[in-house]
Structure formats: C-alpha cells, structure tokens
Length: 436
Image (tube, rainbow, N blue to C red; front, side, top):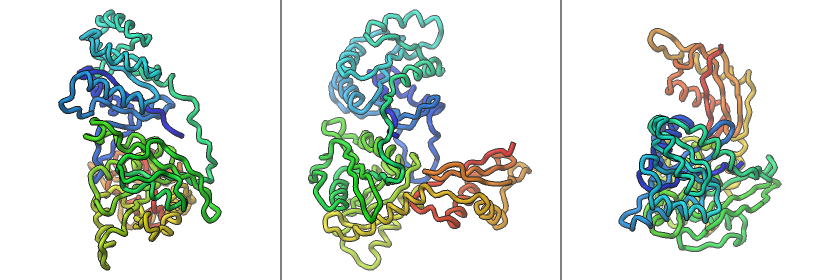
C-alpha cells in the first residue's frame, strides 16, 4: 500500500524543523545507528494511531541567495507537488505576517488539504491569540508547541482525516513488484527497456527525464512481475538541481509499493553518498534489495575488477551485507540474464517462513556456541523464538529481560539465522520480548 505523504510548509523561523524533529523523536520509527547509513533529516516514515505515512520537512532546503519571496514559493511548490496533505506552520508569537499570507495564497490555489498549525503557543493564555489565524482561510487553527510537545495529537488527528482512501493495491500477492531507484542517469529507464526487450520507457542522456511513475506488467518463465520505474529523481529548477535533497521523494512511493527494490549504481561514476541515502530508505522500509551495477560494459576489466568493485560496495553499504550484487549492461544486454532470477530469489526469501521447532534448534545451537552475555551480574536467558511476520521476516525471541539483549548478540543471532535459512536479499528483524 502506498503511504500518504505529509509536508510541513511555512515561512522561515516558524518551527517547521522543530516540529519535524519532535515527531521524529516520539511518533516516528526509530532511526538505527547502523554504520554506512547517512541520514539527512528531511524525510521519515511516521505512524499516528493506525495510520502510516511519510513526512517531509521543507525547512531543510538550501536556498542560497534567492529573494525571500522566492524561498517561500519554492518550498510551497515542493509540498504542492509531493504531498497528499500539507501542514501549514505559522508562529503564534508573531501573528499573521505578509509572508504567511503569501504562503496561504499559494496553498489555497493548490487545492490540496491543508491543516493550519499555530506553533509556539506554549501556555493557555496565548490561545486567545490564535483566532486571528482563521483569517488565513484554512478553517480551525491548531495551537501547538514544538518546544513542549503540546497539541500535536489534535493536529495529527486532523491530518489523518484527510488521508486518501483509495491507496489499496490492485495487484495479486503472487505478482512480484519491483522498483528501480538510484541517482539520475544511472540507467534505470534503459534497464527497464532491457528487461522488457522493447522501448516502453523513454530513454535520454539528460538526467531527470522520467517524470511520472510507470507501472509495467511483465511475465518471465511463468512468473508475473510489475516493474515500477521510479520517476522525478531530480527535478528541474535551481532548488532541486543545486541540492538534490529531494531527489528521493518520488522514489519513496515506489519503495512503499515494492516487494523488491533494485538499487542501481553507475559503474562509471562509482559510489557516492547519495547512493547510500537512497539505499537507506529501501532498507529502512524493510524491502528486499538487489544492488545492480549498470554500465559494466564501460569499465576496463581484468580478473580482479569485479571482485574489487564488489568489495567497495560492501565497504560503503555495510548495512546491506545481505543484498546480492548483479553486474550488467542495459545497453549491450550483457549479464541481463542474471537479474530476474536474483529478483525472484530475493522476493522468495522476503516472504519465507520457517518452522518454529527448527528455528529454536538453530537458536539453541547458537547459544551453545556463544553463551548469552551478562550485564551487572545478570545473564540473558533465551527461552524460545518464533517467527511473527514476513516481508520482511521478523522473529520474536522471548527472554528473561529484553534489556540484556545487547546489539552485538542480536547481530550474532541474526547471522546464525542467515547461516541456517539463507534469507539472501532480504533484511530480517529480531525483537527481544519478555516471556511475561
């Protein structure tokens, strides 16, 4: 299911990033401290009550020396294009400013649902000051405090009420859905064409040619696929071209809808920081991942070239040690035959379920090999384990005290599970739970 997108919009200095960080710290999935993942606090997945959604902080855009009014306009344009619902952030201490009115005009013309939030209302006495904000034309203003975390629940209730109701997938579970993500001009569209054997997607050497997500149904060896060609990886315009901080926004919706994500790398350019950011989103979403090194035909090779390039990928993508790597050329079709079987394997492992008794045999053997750690005189005791979910596979391990489950030992158990069952191409999750 595609997650709704919520953007926080407003003039500078109204507290957009403060609210985003407050939500990220209390309502949004925990950001893991995994080596190799560079986080740029512009986007995150969020959860409120029974709703999952993506949230964007437009406050992090680097504008440069453009005129002030153009800054506001650029931020609003990003939100208008990408968001399903917009949180219009204002500052209760300043009242309505001319810049607020400019943002309001742009958002009003967008026809997008807008929830008006009045930030920095830190005490009840200030609530009388919010009534002027009705004049902006977006209905009831919600008084909030980013500093103290007040009023966020009512604001998020109003946001969730605007979420689209038609986000249900149309494809059967047996169909493997995969998307292609990566920086501009790594050859995503060419790769789609090579898979299909025909020019179904316009190919150009101009970065950012693809504008809209394109779903293509495809069958190979009796297996049905849906190819989701991600779009808009870099938008035209000074803001987008200069920062590329929003280069992944269009890809996020495709990731949400995918079983398998192909992280496409340009062999000519090698690996840059943006590749890790894009791959990090797919990893955090729990999708199966295959790393695809495209344009391999352009590289001068000897017997060590592929091995050395693979080691570079492993060094840069430490958090994707489970992801297989495929080297190919969409242009010459060389090694293209290796791609779909690897997608099928990753998808199969992504939905793999193991028997509880066999899982527990593996866990107990692991404990015998490497006894559980102690902390402050207490030793971790593992009673039993069971698989609780697929896509990605998730395992609950019942223990005497979850606090005693150190990250390093959890990683050890994950490695033993992978040794026993494979799970190549898919992340797996382990949760320590109290037997009580």
